[in-house]
Image 1: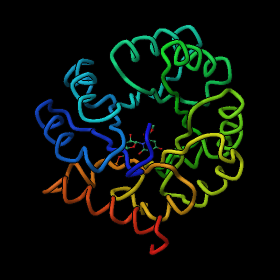
Image 2: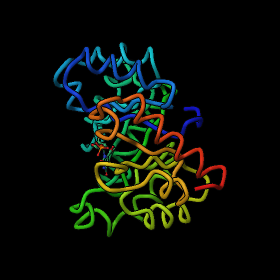
Image 3: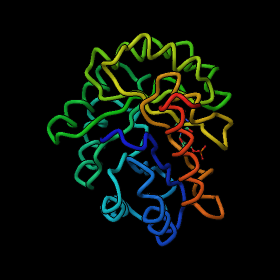
Image 4: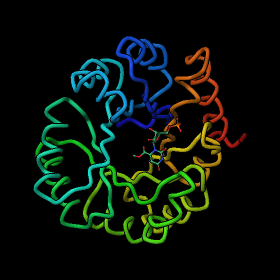
Length: 221
Ligand code: O7M
């Protein structure tokens, strides 16, 4: 995945036409499109190939099962044309290894959720987030998912993993996080959903966030 705009669109709409229109509109401002259950359950897995025309696709299925089932899920995800898959880390090293094995067969990437951005993310997952980040690094994952709503946690996790893994960070806009803050804290990409796809003009909204990130990277943030 190229690090250009440093933004990933979370395309959580449930209508195929709307999804394709937004993807086309904002493609110049995003490095990837994250597709998850809302869109795939509503329109079918084929949407991954259709959207791949506009940007690399990260399949957000937060895979969280035993190694064998994880292997079967990841195979389907990559056969469907996704460039990367998002998996949960809390299921342990063997489950994660299964995903990474399949990803390397297909030459694709795995992102691991170490902790989550919503208030409940602090209840059970945050206390083990750093251990999950270390495990993901040892296992050879491509990246971590860490919360833009808590830039101080992104900073801490960046310190733990160094430059070995990338960090993608959801929680910008609708959940209260700021793109520039989390890029400054060490995230490689921010993930933005509602602030773009619910905006009256998604292209304008994406362009504004991209400009904010650019200013931060130039040191004007
Ligand atoms: O910008 P939003 O809040 O509309 O969307 C954020 C997207 O990121 C949405 O698709 C969530 O499911 C996802 N997300 C979080 O919001 N918080 C997390 O901790 C993790 C994710 C995620 O993408 O996990 C892989």
